[in-house]
Length: 206
Length: 206
Image (cartoon, rainbow over all chains, first blue to last red; front, side, top):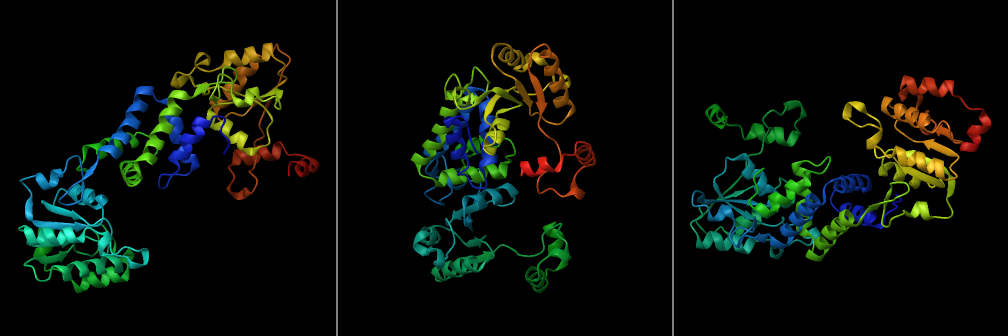
């Protein structure tokens, strides 16, 4: 692409570094910003800059936060006995958006993957064990990806806390609500039959 | 979506104002920016801010420019007798990227569309007529959308300059190179047969 303005070219270049954004999409965004009023664009750049410089990570659960301890950890209405262990911030947002979970979180910052050089030291596992040891946590809900790496991470954490009085559970796997049986993969379908639920449970889940 | 940080929420909000960006994509971009080093993010916001505050519009052709007259208009190597009339900056970039056009441009800033309240006063048509009158322009190449609005705009401009010694042409319409006949719409196919070319022209075009 040939631009007749270095300023436009630089902005397009910066946008196309973002995930999933090619040159054409970047140009579309830059032209949109160009058509916006200057104060609006200042608002845009200001929000991005404030976000990057201002965001902290919660000292308790490693979630993003505007203060040292995040709004979820300081909320007295949350069940402090349950901790949902997730891979990333995105998972916290996904679970929070369901509005159905009232416990706390622990963001690992990834999952064990020796091939990619991610060992236990790279993840927030030590601080998780400390939380279980020092607080009244009675259940760790593992909400990790159903991959070999995810399962390895669950297994590793389970071993680390096996001497402590804590129950470890994982989120249920099965056919999605609204999912059609014929499109489900064999593994999920087989597991969902093996782990079938009494009909009373099904009614309660709805 | 529920965020545990107002700063993240604000940044996602700003990104989702851009065209084609929903909340989830915006979040992906924000998390990418969050994972980048602070100087890199400053580079990003700086480029956007400099772009919006620094970009000018060429006094000659209304293209974007870093100075009063754009690099295309000041280039002595360009053919000043040909002016390609386009709707927007994006079209200038598209034509320039072909590397096959050596004339000048004129950016209208839209096309005539009375229903949307776009009349001749909203477009850069007066300045186009001035350019034709005062300069040595001998050909206006209309590269507008093949819609009713585009055709109306071509017709309107043609009427404005009909007393002046200038030829008006439009870019060729037809089946795209690599396009399959069976997928072409009837209108394009019919026109491409009606406006068929002698075989010598075809060979030269390749």
